[in-house]
Length: 409
Image 1 (cartoon, one colour):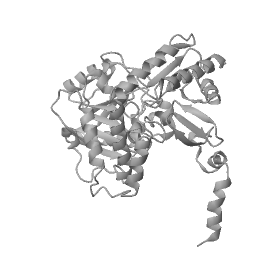
Image 2 (cartoon, helix red, strand yellow):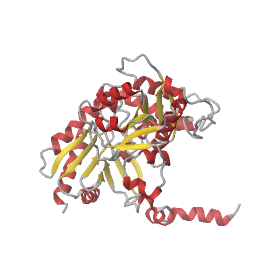
Image 3 (cartoon, helix red, strand yellow):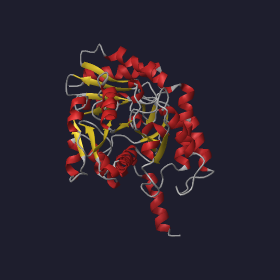
Image 4 (cartoon, helix red, strand yellow):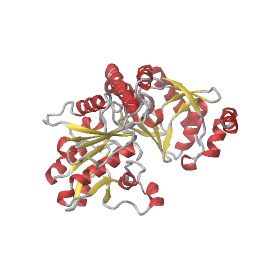
């Protein structure tokens, strides 16, 4: 044993975690303002012992709260049984998650269809798989072109980044993957104009999360579904931020009475464990054959155990109904504020739109007061508390947010 390596390893315990982060991690996230070390429900604690209400949830990830007992128990039990196997073999957990997702996606649909699931580790990866699936589906007819919306966010891998409709995130990484057209959000005519003989799919979010928590107009997604049906196009709905109960339905598209051809999800699926899923109708999923796509860790039993426990717990608490019921409290607290132009979003994914460009300062003041939220640009505060949040915690968070808005200059 090399004692010098042991000594170096042990020395890491005495270094401030924020200082260590700044010295050894790449700067792509900027310098972190906090080091969070533990959590319970809607509360998190930093390395100095200060407590915060977490109304960001790891950006809509920890929907069942931090250290959820049911999820922790499932992960612990699975870790003592089997952590990982290659996807050339089956495991007993992942297929159960896939079956539940298929059931939840088809809830309320009158279509006589079923679907199949591909697992990966993140939202970007499952959006990447959706892009590849659409292109493989269109291969025989020579179609590969995908239409997405300006302001959209689908990930940071090269395919999902190319699909993303935000120039600020793309500019440094050109040339991007060809075959994408970005059209104005919430405009069906713009989609129709962009369709060519090579178009295979339209890819949209039911609420634009990173674009500013922007809602579609009533009837928009239904009109897009109808357009895709008329023109023989796939409709891909990115539910990475909106899925699994957060908006007041199991999936955001279900508010609009449609069934997509492909649905992607991640974030809340594992309550913090890295897992994402791409669901597709059988007729689309069959485009993938052995060797077309893969992920070493996708659907492995440890992450899948967290997903299965998450789904079970969400069913137990009726997560969509709870999110819908609690979400209206934000309207009650904030819509009368003269600094707030409006509150967008649905359920427990909300955007607080400010009249002044003070969002980043508001986030700083909230953090000082013990509330974690985040800014999207200069005018929008995003709120995504865990679905297990209490009414008193929402009351407190809205009070702190209101104080911070009033103090920001």
